[in-house]
Image 1: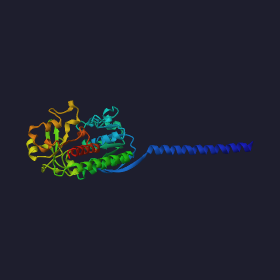
Image 2: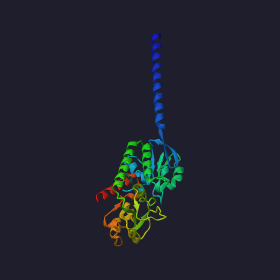
Image 3: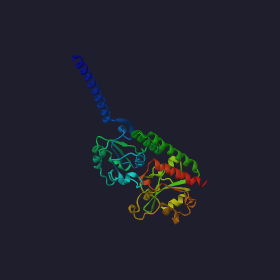
Image 4: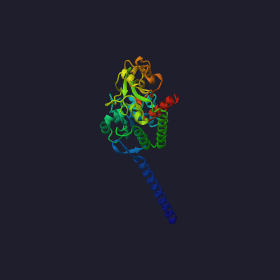
Length: 329
């Protein structure tokens, strides 16, 4: 009997040790899950350590909205007021709206409790405010930098986001499509054509200077376009720089690249006097003899461009550019 009791006691001890060991392993696993993993990337402000995958994401950079949406990234908060209507986010009432850059509601970021804020473009000015309101979050900024090539910056932004969200393959596909669209556009462009960049807003025409002009300017560098008109101090103004139709006609452009700023907004939200860019330009009596008008060599940016200036928008534009010019060869 004594022997039997000793055997049972020893067996109980083994079972207890085994269970204790299992409990310890489960505890370690739980702790590992709680701590999560991180990825180190570099943004405009240096090296950043980001939770991977992030558990709570806030996005305020217009150039990233479509990428995040297409990748199925859930947002706890974002600049919903600045999103184009065709994005799923714009219809998702569960996303806390931080408002627009003109009327921001930055306190919403506290409620969102993010561990990652993808900030930039119109909200870049609020970097420090967001960092103070969400001290536990990484504020990641990947805006195209002025001193770098714009197309390279779009690639960088896409690739870094791919690293952060574990979407490297998807990021590579976006970059490959972008590069292919540029090659098509370059091949379609006639080196003899002199190009002009324009922005229409509220029925007015603004000049988008090569390199620096809002949205349109970088296209001149990427495609190596020959400008029909160059000015010494072009700006990044969202409506373009002042120019008369007489000056446009005198510069005699063979090709026009046009951003219709108002097209991104619902009709009721557009400025008074707004009209489609095609109507403003192609129905202008003063421009009727301009080669680009006569030959129908006008390439318009996608309608939602003003609110969506990311890599997908430029890919679409370059393919439209190639389609238009290839058809005329």
